[in-house]
Image (cartoon, rainbow, N blue to C red):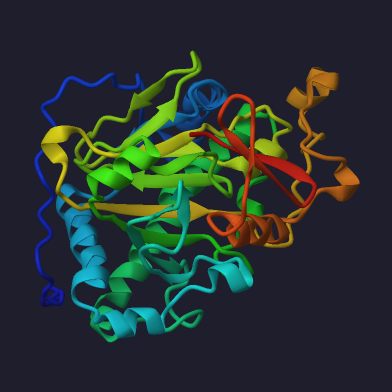
Amino acid sequence: MPATTLPPVPRYTPPPTTTESLEWADLEIVDLSKAATPEGRAELAPRVRDIMRTTGFMYVVNHGLTHAQTERIFDIGNVFFTQVPDEERLNHAAKIAEEGSKIGYKPRQLWTIDNGVRDQHEQYALHRTIFGQQKHPKAIEPFLPELRAFSEHNHYNVLHPILRMLAIGMELPEDTFINMHNFDGVGDSHARFIKYHPRTAEDEAKTNGVWLKGHIDIGTVTILYSQPVAALQILSPDGKWRWVKHIDNALVVNVGDAIEMLSGGFYKGTIHRVVQPPEDQRGHTRLGTYYFALTDDDVKLVPLTESPVLQRTGPGIVRKCDDALAPTMGEWRRGRVKTYGFTEMTKRADGNEEQVINGIVLKYYN
């Protein structure tokens, strides 16, 4: 059989990695290929459990895509921002404020960051099914089969093993979390490309260099494809912000607020933010490639008290609200997406901010 010829795509070339001396986060590296068997998952699960209870972030290697395949996905992602006319991009705008969904295009300067400064990043989110749920710009159409394969790869080959190990860590059946993430179900799990643009010195001063406030992700698991521009920082257990270092063809994986709620606080969503890159990378754009996993919309975000681990924990189970008042994933996602960057937040004594969504206090960290 002749080899499949892929459609040509302009090459995206990121800047070199920084040579500056930064305080890097000490994140563990997990070999995902070991999770292909029940024995391998059983061996890895305690380690993943401990990571997601402490630092909350980990590198994942041997995830199933080659370096060349990952590079091509970045090339395709850049097409959204370089080959699609402005008017056409806006024709595919996400209904963020209207429906609380990020599926589609988000333009620059939609959100307020701080002191009146608007954001300078644009993004395009593709519903995980790629076909049928949304229409895409014409320049993207040749790449839709590859994007569907990319979405399926993340969902089945990366997300599923991680969800299995998180369940094992709570002594639950392996498919507990998987059954909440149906690829063809009603929910907002999606692939997303985000492009950050440099800001003026004045805007950097007004925001103390923060491009995206410290937060915990919406959903269950976030999968980020490592890229060279240093800008991601995590709030370490000792209270210090530390940079996440680039590892070629690795993933950076963390859990979000839905896993924290479903696990009764056993797993903790880690606070992270995006800041101005180090001096030797300023002036460059920063292209990110992600897969954001959320449960099906109808999943109620209450602790899985059938977990033997939580039963042994007893009063230590952490609830963000009474179980009877707990939102579904769809309600929680819509509440968070509709308000971020659009509504005023309450300033706290420590300088951070908070707002109440669905009766739950949500914090943002400056």
